Length: 432
Image (cartoon, rainbow, N blue to C red):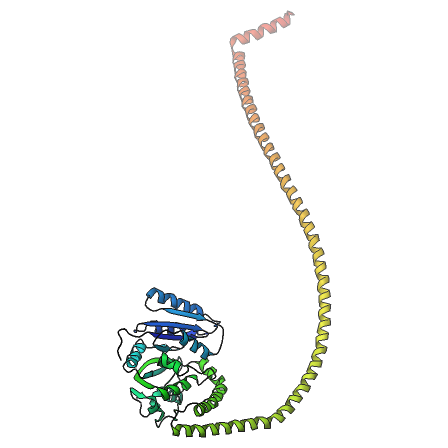
């Protein structure tokens, strides 16, 4: 089969709270060597950073400008509804699903499309896929669910799906020998012609669709590991929780195979009848077992109810006592609050008075400082005046000393002596 241009592939990524591994998953999508490619992301009401990561990825894709990315956030619903929604929005010739935990090899889409384009009868092409886990997987798990394609006895690159339905290993475990949607490429026209994913199923959705492709289309196989299916603790625990859903799905699928899938070979239909009979017998035994234990369970429930009634009575009494204690505590608390409010008012008044006193002290201190400065200035002026007086006294003393020296000199002179004698003679003669 040849085309003038390569066919568009719609890479569909359903998400729900997948932030843990989503960056690695989306990086593997953008790293595909095949073009043209469109990436469709449908988010099922995530409450973790999933949508923020998706927006980062779209911005990155826009910068590269080679791969358009479309995003649809919607409220939580069945996962299968999200899968069908993305297929309805797809524009490509082929659908390629990539689940939020899984990873694609860069050449995955290119090699699957190359085989699909080689024969227009091919509606489904799949490849081998590896198991990806941060922790070592149990040996029996890896042996059974590692390369599931080994379960086929006569798998070829191209064959009618009916050949695989007649394969001797069809009923051998694992039942799904094609794998998960991550390692499968679907022709969109065939997907819708066969009805898409069945929303009445929960766990066996993909295997049911593969059966319809096997019965009404050709199947292609690329014997390379071009995808990785991630197995992690959260996924394993979710699988255990959904074992009940898978059990119910099994009965629904058996009935569907017998009532609608006329393409199934007689050997498969006969084995399906046997398995449905065993399933219904086991279901009947389980119902009888539950009925048998219902009486004992009812008695246990009655005893539990009586014990609960007694416990409720005791609880009511304890609640009444606690209510009374609580009321007393609330009254005491109210009184304490009132007292504390009064004390707070008093303290506020005291603080106001202390503030006024402190302001007055600051004012007095400033006034005293001014007076002290004035006294210091006065003392300094007086000290300067005293120093001037002392200097003047010293000058007077010096003058006095000089005068005394002059008098002493005069008294010692001949003239002064003659003068003194004259005065003495006059005194004796009675002269004035």
